Image (tube, rainbow, N blue to C red; front, side):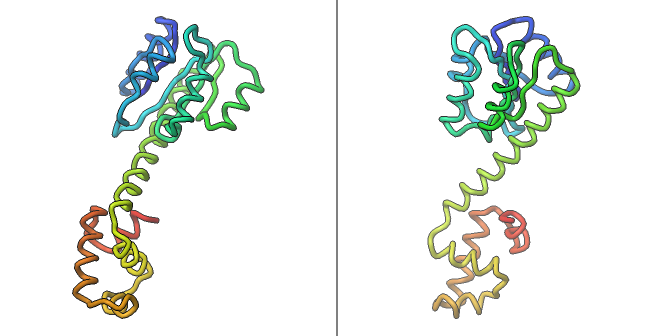
Length: 193
């Protein structure tokens, strides 16, 4: 989902049209606070924020700071759009985690290419977060077994190393595969690389 945060209707409409021309869904927000109030669960197809710097209720920098404080920048990459930016502002924003910074007027194709890259980065961050969430469901013993499986050890070697039965290793292995949503050790290793 492309979130367009700009206080000008004509800009929101034009950017929505550009998104639609690329087959992207978008949602317009008339101000920074309206956007922050609407931020919800991540879109499985990725999210990106086109954020105007100058808005009356809450400027784009303050919105960006709120997203950063909430730890949402990897999930919601921010591309700043402004007619009133300067080099120090752009450099500072990029150093603090903005995905990109465009001055108005901008090249439509270049902007939409960057939006698609930001959406891909958002999807990748969501996938990594999902893997971390599944890892967090593993017990301490399952983590030990997981580490030894990833080291390429067979069940018998894992059992000897941990001082448990081979059947117990098999049960832990089955639980690990189930919780991590994989079928093989190779798939597990690929997921955690």
